[in-house]
Image 1 (tube, rainbow, N blue to C red):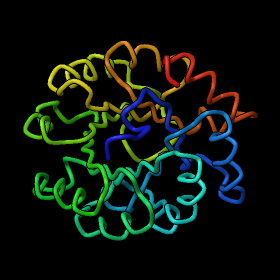
Image 2 (cartoon, rainbow, N blue to C red):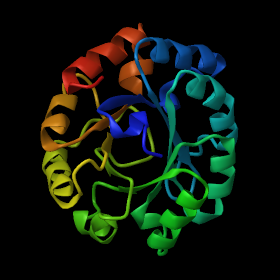
Image 3 (cartoon, helix red, strand yellow):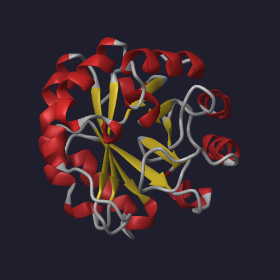
Length: 226
């Protein structure tokens, strides 16, 4: 768990926005462009309205991602995340992030994720105060700050997000990855980076572009990412 792209400044393309009829080739394209973190958005139709993908999607991309020295970053936007850890870990997740709003057993869940050999992350929604992660700040491997309300790709970045990112950064130990997810593109990534973000989830801005590889590199340059 020590050497991983998750601890570097990186853009994490979200396959939620990819063309699923060509998922493998699209993952290969962004990896060839430099991506070393691939983000998987999991939604259950309960915690958020849409239903997206599950462990099968992680399993489908895991081998090619790991062969490139990259990491699979799973973001669980689901209720009762504790019931799903085993399956995502078996499928090949390197990091599993759950929502603070979705469980009353956050500390227990962090330990369960680690017992499965994965890094453990906690996410908070735009309307959730930063204090929700305060008790976990010294124990968590990653914090994800939602910069849109979760549920759908392609939403506009919430302008007040950089201030919240900065507040989270202040409470985290040095070196703890701080991820942002929602509306991240060439225009919004620099303010997130300045506020202290180190991982930048981008879906539509990459896979919705005519050239996903070039879009990836443009956002990486804007964020000062590898």
